[in-house]
Amino acid sequence: MHTLPEVVAKLSRAAGVPVSTDFSMARECSFRLGGNARYFCTPLTAEALRDCIEVCRRLSLAYIVIGGGANLVFRDDGFDGVVLSTKGLNHFSIVSPGRVQVGAGLDNADLTAYTLQYALTGFEWASGLPGTVGGGIFMNAKCYGASFADIVLTVTALTSAEGLTTKSKADCGFTYKNSVFQQSGEIIVSAMLGLTPGQTEAIAGRTKEVLQDRMDKGQFLFPSAGCVFKNDYHCGIPAGSLIETAGLKGRQIGGVRVFEQHANFLVNTGRGRTQDILDLMALIQDEVFKKHGVRLEPEIKIVP
Image (cartoon, rainbow, N blue to C red; front, side, top):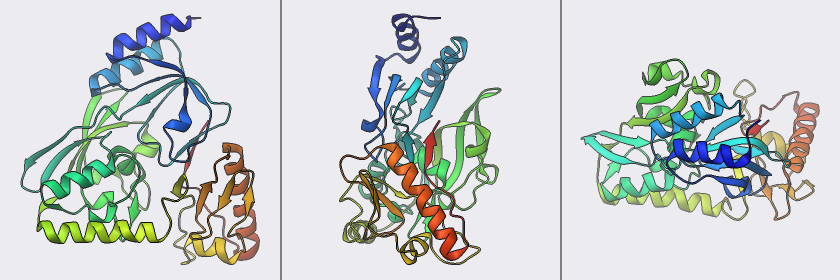
């Protein structure tokens, strides 16, 4: 058994940055709830991330790699291991017209800002989307009729067997809100995106339009993770509509409520716990199944 100072020293040496202990994961998740991680650090390179993972394996420490925490919830009793954030992998560069290289930890809002700065079109749909590029690729985040699969050219990921490897778009296995990375355990560290030169005024106009629509729908009023359940395209009715017609808008457990303006959003009213989310999700699944015969599939990930 290794002491806390020993683990901190080894992780800090591998990461090249300080390591926090007893770190509140509510600070890193868009729901703004969840317990503490025993260790937390943000490596600044893919190589440092790889070295941190090697330390975790060598010391038999549980670990998880996260992005912006926009689709992720930690349990109330926290995580007895190492949380490695990719937010330090936040580079952006234009490789050639229509091709940009970005780090997995680049915030989606920052990528939106770059597209406006350099007049690049193709990412307007993601205006106001929380989280990071890596998380968006992992989830194949989709909104306003577009998804990350539409702009990804290649993805570079860290694998346990091969180290860094680059996958083509076809090898990423993109489907509705899914990618091969959700099953493979590979860790996304960067991507080449297809964003083409466009007209600044048109890009800014559409970007502002999408952001305003999110604001009009109240998406920034409370901490949340956006849509909690995937749409079931076999039944052809959006999950939010299924939840609403089951009479669940405004239903609350503890400090978490079904959002009145969008039934597929659960919001933290300020005193929510992760257990409240789990209980409310279970209630929604049961009530929707009773009403419609559809078993909703969660979109958000709960850290074990």
